[in-house]
Every structure is written in structure tokens, then in C-alpha cells.
Image (cartoon, rainbow, N blue to C red):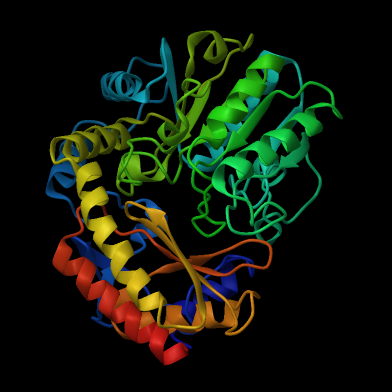
Length: 427
């Protein structure tokens, strides 16, 4: 056990998850690569849990942060803040939400907390609809709406949460249906739930479930849900903490795959907008954002240095069409991994879109999750010079692949080759 790991265990919680039997300390990065304290170089296919959206040590972001740090780091929302206003204007412009207002937080968890506060206040209801297999953060309110037992340590909650079907296409009671019938069955389930409860405040849903193993419904499910929700006045919160900013390739926001019935009422975001800086936030129609009847501030949400990072990062992402790169390179990577999976009995499915790819693992010859295999592949990939993630919900285990969106074709092929060797050595 190295000294830093020993010190970590002495002063930090036992429940603070660490990857690898021998945890690594990442000391620096450049582009799509990082290095650990032993000097080992890795191709990063997880990007700080989808936070490093553009690249490690991106010069444009580094320069913006350094220049802002030389002026002032922080003043709070009690004072006018030019970088915060400028980033809010940019985000409102690309949000797709009419008359959009933006509130900044420091994380996705806090963003979802804020969205829940707004929705329950606006609707005068503490009932919330959420998706099975979902994950929305680690605060008291967000674990109460998380439909993933492995990440929800308590059933106590200020909210009454009801879970509906639809976030996982290939498992559950509707898995054998075709896409149209699947959507119809999920809509019928939603209608049934609404008939058994007091009027909910909102439905919160990830367009692609992140921690749950990069699962998603057929395109159009949330549009169909939206039609039902509108009948009851129920708001739609799209949790875009992991899917936003072009990550899925086909769309800038994950909800746009379900846009037939209009945009969400609220969108939450975080992670990728800051390229590693601590930024989260909520976008909502003005009437919803302005529904609070008491004062509120955010001490560190919208602080100048993180806003400088976000502005530089969003500008780079848009000017270099990283969404398009995610679509092109991600499409090649998915097909490459599917060709490998077809030869391996333990790979149940390769799924995803853009550079948000899940590989679900099962015990060969069964449909049962194989979490030990996921851990083994994770370890073997690291030994081969590749960092990936893992996830999954009820009886599922999946590898999670989410590189920076500037990934090159050569790097995609390099990572796929390392991952292929890790999978073949496991199965």
C-alpha cells in the first residue's frame, strides 16, 4: 500500500469510492492523455467522469483561467459579474428553451437540487417522478430521486418519489417489445402511475443514464411522456449533467432526441461545460426560474474563475465542432467495439451514441450481470495504458467509455485495441 493511499484511508470516508486494487494518483494531462505519479502514461477514455469534455490542459482554457486568476478569483453573486452574465447569455442562446434564465451552481448534484426546489415550489407539490436505474447526485434530496440502489444510501427523503419505466431499453418487463410498442407500454405505465398519486411537480430524467451504464430509451420516449405530462401540468426536467455539450454526437443536448413535443421546462447541466472546473447550473423558463419568493444567492456558483473556464471551453467546443467529431469518431469507435463484442460470449451489448458508449457484460451463457468481469477488464485496461469507467444498476454491469470530444481516429483505434485485449483476456 503506497503512502498516499494509506493517508487517504486514515482521513477520508470508507465509502469514498476508488478505482483499482492499487489506486493511482493522476498528476497531469495533455490532450487525451494523463500521467500518474509513477510516470505511467494513459489514454483517458473516462475524462474525469465526463468532465474533461474538450481536452486535458487545453491552452485556451488554461490561458483564460490564468488571466482571470490574475485579476480576481471570486466575489459571489451579490455583485455584478461580467463573466457570469456572458456565460449565461451563451448558454441561454444554445439551450433551446424560450425566455431562458440560467442559475449557476458548483456541481450537477447542486444543479438538480435547485431544479427540484424550483419545480416543487412552482407546482406546490413534493411528489416527483423519476426513472428506474437513474442517478442524479449525492445530496439528501438527489439520492431520494435516484433509482439506482448502489448509489442511494437512504430511503429518507423530503420528496415522494415514484419511478416509471423507460430508461433501460433491453431489460425489464418491456424489453422484448419493438421500439413503438416499448414507448406505448411506458406511456401507459406513466398514465397509470399518474392515476394513483397526487399531482406531481415534475419528471426528472437523464436522456442517457450515466451511472446506470449508459442506457437509453428509444428516441421519442420523452416526447411521448411530455404530451402526457402537459395534460397534468407536470414539468419535465432534463438532467444533462453527462449528456450535454455535444457528447452524444447527434445532438447538442440529449433531450433533442425527444424534441417532438418541445423542449424541457428545466435543463440541468454540469461536468463538461467547465472542462474540469466546478460548474453546474439550471436553465429554465423565466416564469419557473423566478417563482421563488425569498432571497437566494450562490457563494461559489458563477464565481469568476470558473466562468472564465466555461466561456473559453464552450467557445472552443463550438468553434471546433466537437459535437461533429463526437458523432464521426464515436460512430467509428462503436462499430469497432461491436465487431469485437460479436466474438465474445460475455459481452451482451455495445450501446450508446457519440462518445458516450457502454459495454454491458454478463456471465457467458447467461443473462446475469458480471461485475467481477467489469472490474477485471477495468484493471487490465489500466495495465495496458487505458482508463475507462464502469457502472450499471439492478443486475447489470457495464463498462463506460467517454473520452474527451477531441479524440482522434488514431486514438480511438488505439483505445479500442487495448480494450479488445482486456476483454479477450477476461473471456
